[in-house]
Amino acid sequence: MAVPWCLRVVASLLTVLTLLTVTGCGGGGGGLPRPTDESRPASTPAVPEPGTADSVEGDIDAAVSTTNTYWSTHWNEFFTGTYRPPRVVGAYDGASGTAPTCGGTPLPDNNAVYCPGGDYVAWDMDLMRAGHQRGDAWVYLVIAHEWGHAIQNRLDAGLVDLARELQADCLAGAVLFGAARDRTLTFEDGDTDELSDALSALADETPWTDTSDHGNASQRVSAFNRGAESGVKNCLPGAGQ
Image (tube, rainbow, N blue to C red):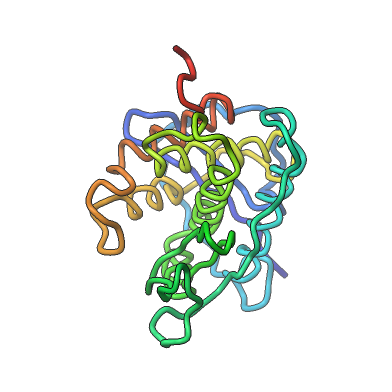
């Protein structure tokens, strides 16, 4: 039987963010959760059984479904035209020599990508498995972020921020917290720093990112929080001005 999981994000002095999988973690309500006492000890994450909803494959499937459902439901609230999801190429092995190509170049090892030319999202399973060991939230963040790049590719140029990576983080926050309001995800105060850890681990200091590619950990968490708190519109250029 799959064990529901929950997580807490402590982003230094930034907003405390929390997420749950679709199965939830003992209740939960609408709206953003209040910050919790950061001094209480973290719980030990449950170890998922292979093939359960909390396996890396199960969490990937749930993240894809949740992200696509959010955009298909809410697209016309923000943009004109018809929403078209990207293709999901999904898992690949970047070290095998058989990775899919984007623009004639094999997809990078230990990474996740949105390929504009093929209009697809894909991820190296080594990256996903390693991240999933840090916490289940990893795969939700990675997939919502790469889907954010697919959304950018569907927008007029004036709606795409020059800081494309941080905008994708903002859109990821808007999607995951928006899904919580839709009750396809459930918010609840959690026990670990999984999402904050994932944002930090995927910042520029990591070997699979280029200098100034994604932004530092503080910038990434700040962008994610902006989307989580204020939604998709606040991820667009000029928001709040």
